[in-house]
Length: 142
Image 1 (cartoon, rainbow, N blue to C red):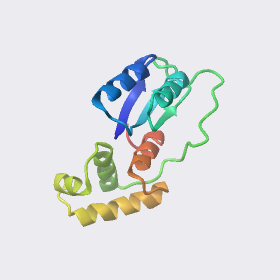
Image 2: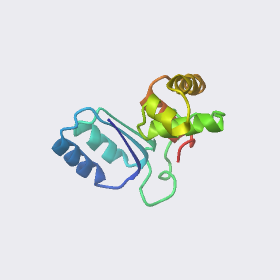
Image 3: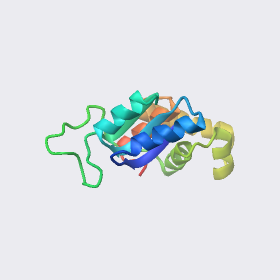
Image 4: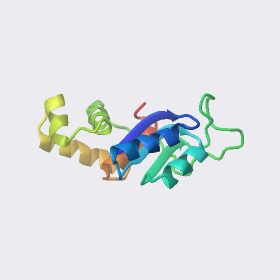
């Protein structure tokens, strides 16, 4: 399961881990725009498989990173995606399957697969979670 949040405030990580344990969700990856390093470490030690934040040193409630924070070495330039590719990518981020994306956009599942192949080449990965993570990091998905 992939959990996407805009901001992870101080202490929200513990609540998230508790709720996921209660639901019996074992394999979870968190994608966040902003999260404190302490919360990210807490999530990983709490049992999440992975946690990614585009601004890992950010103090939630303040714009940007903390003073002296080093920019992420994983930051990428914003790739040029077509409007259709962006709409497919948004639905991937919402957890839709290729078939469901096709139904939503009036395309065949094969056409969706073709769009995803082009998006994957442009972003440099074929993993759906990585596509979403890169899209959040580069600002393609807000």
